[in-house]
Length: 350
Image 1 (cartoon, rainbow, N blue to C red):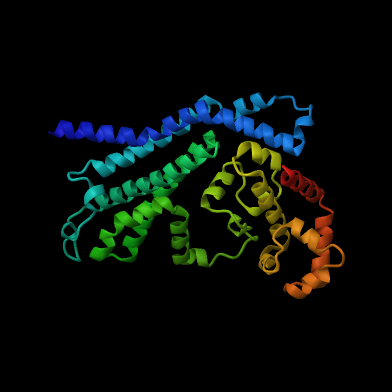
Image 2: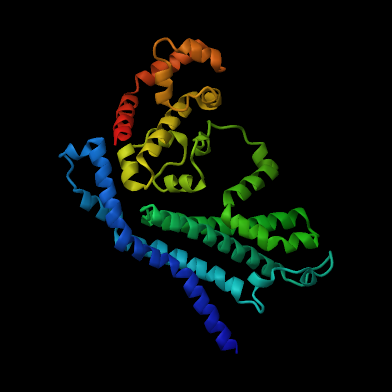
């Protein structure tokens, strides 16, 4: 009976973890050729197909970007780490993933029938489960959007590790704040650990807000968070981080054609994000006052400033006409703005 249970457990873990290698096979066999054709179409729209100075052909670029051997290490690591987490969750009799932590197991308020190390393993296992659920959604989204690069698995691997240690640290943090934890706190541990795996950054931020040592630290430079870019969610931010874009300044200086090739985002959407980021980098905290009057991007600002429109914009927004004139001059001297305006026109006519 015990061997039958172990065989079923191994089989179940294998099925759950097989999603990762099979997603790579599916992408290379069916989705990558379609992505190459789509990229060639966008280049024709932007007029880039006339450039003959590139040393590498498009086929060579894609072969370099999506080498099969580059997937081996990250996929193996993610699969192995998830398998270990599932083993922790399924190995108890009965499995902790089905029973949770009941009040009966907890005992009275001064002691617990469950060892502290057991609770720590629960925090680790449920955090991995949360990261796995998030990763399944992430991979499926990337597969559908023709955008499953090796970086996706590296991103998931680091996220799983990060979420695991954040969950364990949060468990220790809660226990240190409450030396005699209530039954409810222990019973909620699997739920808290699971959502820590899904949203590790939010739990990290919560810990930072509670610790005085972080409150005493002085302010640094403006963070220019990507959360300020309209139309961008968590999946988008994680994807952009894989190509080195972690904040609005990185996005403002990004190359549109390179992002089109390396990601699956709609070219018009990428152009809008870059144009938003350029304006945000310049105006920073005053971006809200401009958005309230319909100025979202540098292209909108350039159009609003034409024909002495700055005085009207000053009346509608919270910024002075002198500030707006300075910003308009800076934006007008940026050669990327004219390039973006031309690209938007070409994409709009496609």
